[in-house]
Amino acid sequence: MRASNLILPLALLLAAPPAAQAYQLWCEDADALRIGVDPQTAAVLLTHAGAMYNCCPEPILYDVEASGGTLTVVERVLEETPCDCICCFDLEIVVADVPPGDWAVVFRWLDAESASWRELTGAVSVPATARDGAPHAELAAPPACLVSTGVEPDASTGAWGLIKTIYR
Image (cartoon, rainbow, N blue to C red; front, side, top):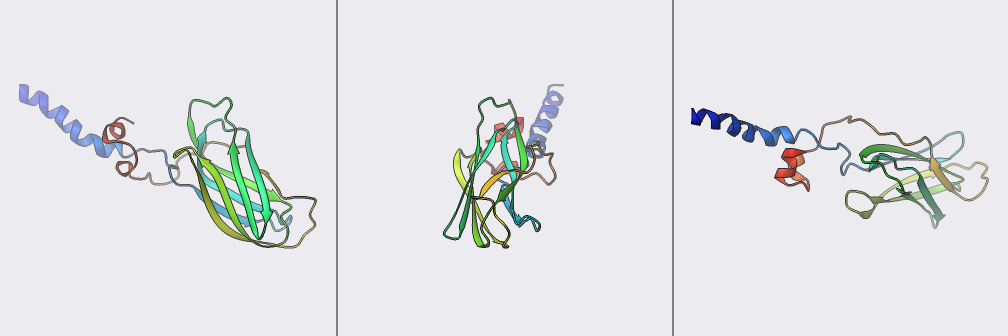
């Protein structure tokens, strides 16, 4: 009788790590930058894909500098009254009034996971159109949490220890 009482807990313990690895926030370390140009306005369109922030990240502000062939956009989240949750976002940003020409794009943000500044780069060619002033950026739409759309990464290789992985 005693041996049978140990078999079930032992089986559950052996099955727990693979089951625990099945769930991890899908956007962890999945940040990507997509770059485009609106053909009608010549605005530069940036998407910070897989951004992981507090569920209530507003306001999200953008500092823009265009000089020396480099368009630098810095994303800042002011979390004065954050919610008690974390979400994944695809933040779509419109950078208007960028002078025409070929630009190296540098996108920076304070990464919530590592608590350090991160950077993604790319390039864009902006056609000539009428400009109203200095380059500036804003969100194309209010941020909204995304649902998982892909395969979850292997949780056993992340920063979580085995015990945390089992119980998340």
